[in-house]
Image (cartoon, rainbow, N blue to C red; front, side, top):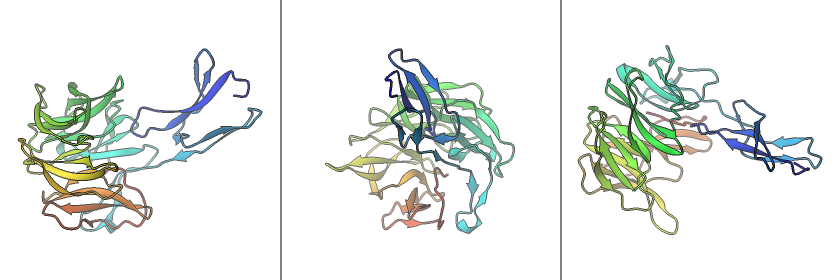
Length: 305
């Protein structure tokens, strides 16, 4: 502020949406006062008039909902949620339901969007959710500045911390193992009941693995990693779920994210935004060119499963 007695700044929330809200910070005491509390993001830019009476900023608002679509016909996409809840990640849940995260809460809903309930409040889930069969749900949780791997029963009870310093996680289809990428450039697995982790792969590149996902038959784990210098390239690889040497699959195009397996287990899928619209692309494990499997002409995809 012009009198030097305070600082105005957008501070980002520790939620998956990560909205920046406006705060006034007294100087030199450091006392903080929040003066916006809405669904907008004021992070992009901020300025004051010279007399300190007018604040100019950029208000960034995002609306996102959960949709379902037949894999073979994106024209049949159907919106199953609506309202001000901003969904970021979706995943298959126990008993045929759908898991989703929003504003730090984990939600559970029917496949048609009905009976939506908060499954785990303030889980502060950042990256991943997965279901271990119909018995457990696994997710990452931000606590004290570190990402922790947690497991709950299928009703959200009996929470148990499995590991710390985790980047991504995914449960095997048989529910016997939780695979995760650790901060020390390793891919590990651990039983959902807890115990000592088992190393699956020491990722040889500087970035480590920043997405892990288990094949539908549980035999392979796919991951993304960076390789090359001075400009690293994002590449996709697979490794046996029991460990061993990794196998290179393909280079990922710039902007690809959200790695998943195809239902057949013969290809990897990721989302890619081109010309203002996101679509799901599929890369065969056997090689060859990736191809889009949806053909949306507008809208952005934040997560898919």
